Every structure is written in structure tokens, then in C-alpha cells.
Length: 138
Image (tube, rainbow, N blue to C red; front, side, top):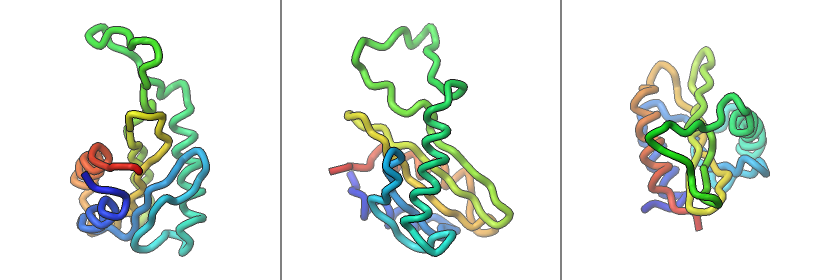
């Protein structure tokens, strides 16, 4: 199970990866960064992407709805973030925010900045999901 640094190194192996970060969406702080930042400042980018993540995570329209097969959650069981990921498309790239679910009340997401002409959005989304499941936060 990779920690933050190992996870970010794996993310940067994706075709078209330009930069990545692990960010706490409640504080806007970057817990780790690698590669380039869209605006040249990883801390500012972390704060800006945290706003987007917080907006998505706190919207009732995106709340988790139990299906009859799932039944109701036991009281006190963490539901995790209401969304899995957010993808923002720009004229030359993709910004993927993947929420990380943990045993404790996590407010962390992975941010990947992907070059649109070199990257594969579907592959990056699948790989980011796998890494988010294996990420160890210490």
C-alpha cells in the first residue's frame, strides 16, 4: 500500500500527467505535490481545487442514495464522500479530483492535471480510483 509520495510517483507515470497533489479539501492544504502546477504555485492550486471538491462534496444533489439492495447503513458508519470524482475539462487539459475514502472521516482527494492531447481520460480515471483505494494516510 503506497503512502503519499509513492502514490504521487505512480500517478505521474500516467501518459500525459503534468502534475498531481494530495489535498485536504477542508483546509485546502496540499499534503504532497509532484510535477507542474497549472498556475505555477502548488499551494494556491491546492486551495483552489479544494473549493471545487468542497462544493461537490457538500451539495445535496450529489448525496449518496441507498438502493434497496444496500439497505440502510448502521448508525455511526461512515458514508464517505458523496461523490467519487470530479472532472473539469479545459481547452488543453483535464483536472481530475478523486476523493479518498478511509476508515476515519477523511477529507482528502487526489488531484491530477492531465494534458488533453497526450492523456487518456478513461485510463487516468480508472488508475486514480485504484490508487485512491490503496493510498495509506499516516
